[in-house]
Image (cartoon, rainbow, N blue to C red):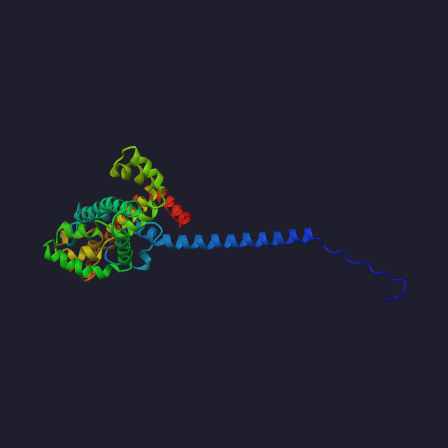
Amino acid sequence: MLEGDTVTAQPQPSYESRLAYSFERTERLRKIGKALAYLILTAWAVMSLLPIYFTFIMSFDNLGKSLTMRDVRFWPLEPSLKNFRDLFQLDAPFWLEKRPVMRWFINSALVATIPTISNLIFDSMGGYALAKLKFPGRNLIFLSIVATMMIPGFVTFIPLYRMMHEYAWMDTYWALLFPGFAGVGGIFLMKQNIQTLPTSVLEAARIDACSEFKIYWRIVLPTAKPILAIIGITSFMGGWNSYFWPYLVSKSKKMLTLQAGLSSLMGAGISGMPPSLTDYGIVMAAAVIAAIPMIIVFFIFQKYVVQGITVGAVKG
């Protein structure tokens, strides 16, 4: 360095400017990450909805007895309701005549609605008794309920099957309905939810000469609507989608549920129908019919489901 030269110091950025730059950089990265997350979730949602969309579209197409990738279209070539007419036997082919789809639909409706109603009644009563009533063995009963929740459902099929056989309930509605009249999972959820209800409210109702049933009906049930909605939806969907148990206890095709009966439309070996006779358009129409009730029930009670999830997240 020559004599007389001056050194100019570079101004250092202030703490505030460095903090602002760091904040802007973090905010930019957060927005990029959020955009990528939305992009991935949107792509995942579209991929999940595509099979449902193609099933719906192909139910209005004349697929016949062959199904290839060329038949997967975004819009049917000749839209018609023929598959639905054939499904409900308005113009049924010969192989569908011995498969009463309307009877299967009614069976599924019964298996879904009656156990759902009984679940809502018995689960809420059991949860209220375990949460707010004092009686000998209450804790032991609750522990037994929790223990049974760890047993896989398929393990109970053999004793239930023997019970149905001993009671001569095979191929009857009793065999389809009885195993679903109450569920330990619903009792557990109701007990945990009702336990958060202040006991002072119930004591005040008892002082006002309210009976236990009136307390249960007027106070407990209205506060437990979100949990009741979750129990109702899961019970309904479980009953509507039941396949193995109805097929196990039904000796005749007329006692099958819709999900179990649909397998006989596929020529899957258990139906006795050659696979070459499978009309895939009718199968797609049946799948659409089977999905409609679950979609309707979910959208009707969606508000309560969201409330139940929120309550569970806060109180858990």
